[in-house]
Amino acid sequence: MKSFRWGTDAGIENLTEGYTHVFESTFETTQGIAEYVAHPAHIEYSNLLAPALEKVLAMDYQSNIVQL
Image (cartoon, rainbow, N blue to C red; front, side):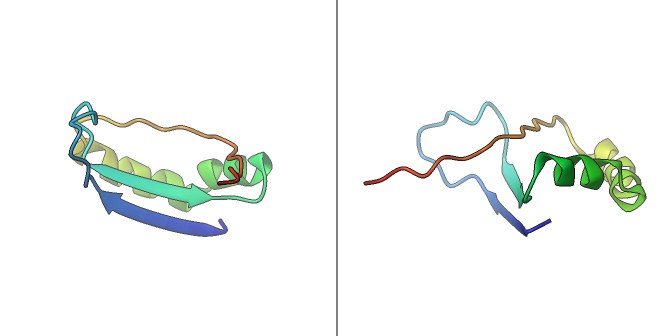
């Protein structure tokens, strides 16, 4: 994992569909994502956290730089 950031909803548009928190992890490769997801410590923590969550949305994506 290259970086990890998190935050809570700060939007005023009411488009979050009930989601309140965002957790963003950055990886060098998709292989890195696969290794992280399969890691025993990640699985253990996920199993502890899951019962406290009402719903989860997970997305893997490749970002693009936008020139302004």
